[in-house]
Length: 325
Image 1: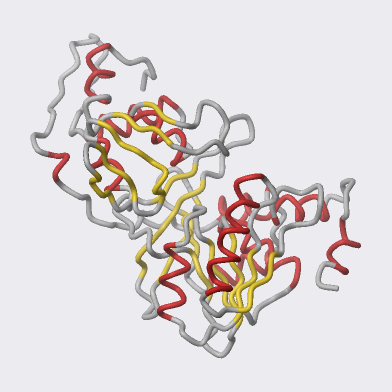
Image 2 (image 1 turned 90 degrees about the horizontal axis):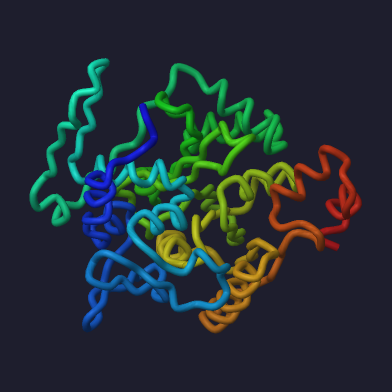
């Protein structure tokens, strides 16, 4: 399909209700006076239901606001092209092309913005070969750990596009949240997006009701990398999927045995700021807390794992052996 868009198509994409887009992605939209905000990211301001701004100075220029397209680009990791296609689909638009290059035919669903899409998991692929190849060869995660998560039903490969799907279950094992990670990103920006209609009060997690320890990460792949590095199959683990702590609040409510929390957030500025704020909050709530970022020189646990397995410069295996000392 041609990636070029007509002025009409771009106008349709930018006419979609941004509040409805955010809700369909699992965010909780709240109205405050003349603007809307998100419960999960209260620094976000949505104006006229069409454009947004983030009142925070910790993020790079170019990620602080814009249109519906920019929202999907920043928070779902989409390219501009993918974001426009997503918005056109959301609006009920259908592009029809033929050899005779007939005019585009489309339908825009009325009142679509008032609806919230249902949460439906992507259809599984026949096998998990692309998933295994990506996680093992590109992200350095061992087959032992990959097989553990596959057998536990926590990850699988989608039939369409072969994305890795990470499932976030509630205490009863019902999947409430799911995110996707593309496996074909060697030459371009990675595809990352939450499944439409998910509940952002949940995150990708591993539960052990006999353990009182919870280890918290930003991303699911960092959680798996941690398991590989430390062969930790005992503690509870949670990937927030963001820097807001709604999934952590939910996990603690559903698993009241938790007494200690180890924060393994990224080593970049947003991750360090979030770790500091969350450490303070949960210490004051009575939990034992510990800040456990990756060793100096690594942004996250997966970067640490990959560097170690490839014997790249940096703390490497020595750091792994002494990380808990």
